[in-house]
Length: 187
View (cartoon, one colour):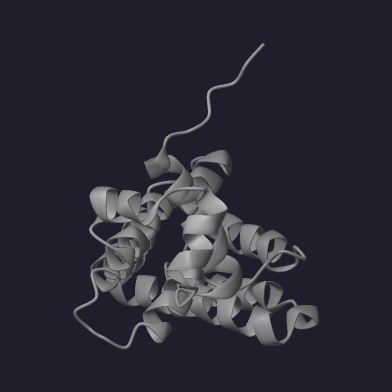
């Protein structure tokens, strides 16, 4: 049985997804091209250059909906759904391959505010905020927008802290703080 090799576009995305997570968004174009086994022309043909490739990697990674899937698996109770995110963060951040948040790392590394990746990063973070706002609204939180911001700060903090102090299990500490945010709902 033969397998079909992915096309140049897919190989570029795969190589960039892998290398930018392991080495950061400043990884060289030559390294991406080498791992993807494609000509430089393919990069420009499909993405207009490295900036477009990075933005597309971030857009596609955001569409996977990891947190939504975790929440859905936790059932219908909004509290359980939100706390499941922190359980997932504990699993993610204790994995030896964990290398931080792809979005925060890219946002901090790309100092040109006009880089197209920033729009994808913002879209991703806004999506998480909306997801938390929705859940907090359903559990009767008096200020769901503020509560969602608090939860997002916790998520971002876990992902950053776990890079520098992985043995501290920041997701477990953040889960306890998330319980305080949920307690404001009074149910």
